[in-house]
Amino acid sequence: MDVIAVAQLSRTYGAFLALREVTFALGRGGIVGLLGPNGAGKTTLLKVLTGFLAPTGGSARICGFDVLEHPLEVSRRIGYLPENSPVDEAVTVGEYLRFIADVRRMGPAARTRAIARVATATGLEDRLSQRIGTLSRGYRQRVGLAQAVLHEPELLILDEPTTGLDPNQIAEIRSLIRSLARTTTVLLSSHGLSEVQLLCDRVLILNQGALVADGPTAELAARGAGTLVTLGLAAGKIRASSAEIRASLAGVPGVVHVADAQPGDAAQRFAVTTDRDSRVALFDWAVAHGHRLVELTPERQDLADVFRRLTTD
Ligand code: ATP
Image 1 (cartoon, protein in one colour):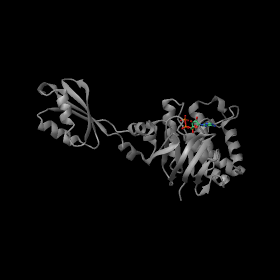
Image 2 (cartoon, rainbow, N blue to C red):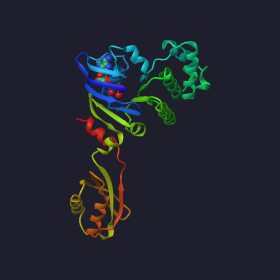
Image 3 (cartoon, rainbow, N blue to C red):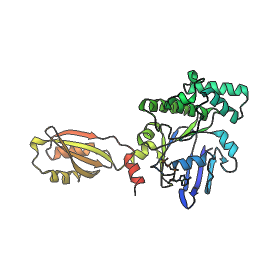
Image 4 (tube, rainbow, N blue to C red):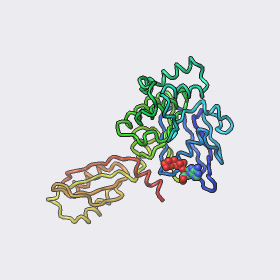
């Protein structure tokens, strides 16, 4: 059964449509990234899935339970780390986790076991008696993750879990998310393309409330405007003008665009955009035209192209 099944889901704020008939389903396992520019509707979608906001149209089911009809069943199956979690800074980590366990109606023995388990999983064993107000942001985020997985949810929903952290804390939280994902399905929102590319097996892209892409991360990245290849020719022997070379390169199979690139040491360089791996064709072209190829560097493909194309008008 799908962990999340969303059909034609909409949410309005007054007359403003923040989610527009969003439909997708997520099976068990893995880390799924929810990506979108500011105001795309990511937080709204996560709040609807976690039962904090009611949908105004369509439906959302978590492990088969409708969020409106079975809010308790849904809450049992979801762990949620909101973007800004309101936490009482005066209490200790242990007191806070005991409070969450009580809200989750755990008995004393289950509570003790659960707190020990999440403290180990999130590296908080030594911090249980420390006041939350005195923790670094990275450790506070660990507390947020610990409370979210206290009841061993099937689905962990994280709203921008690394925002505001320094690079070391980001690395720690990402590695923690990866380890939590061994036992639970994770849906996380982010504006960070590199974060999603690093962490997520699958990505959903929202723009202006609509789902504009849904697929495996690598597949979406490969759908970019193409692979950019920097091609360098030994300058000494070149007789043709740069415009002539560009026109000739444009005829190579797979090449969709050619621009001049910054010249290198004794090399004339071109930025060649291709819609497939055209390295062999470019090599053959150089040989056929008597050019000496001194550089042929494919740039890394990433989601940035796809993201820009899908989320700009
Ligand atoms: P961000 O990346 O900035 O957190 P987001 O993708 O999470 O953005 P949402 O917070 O879901 O986006 O907001 C989607 C849209 O709905 C935005 O235009 C926002 O201004 C609007 N919005 C959000 N909450 C409310 C509200 N309570 N009342 C009116 N409009 C709202």
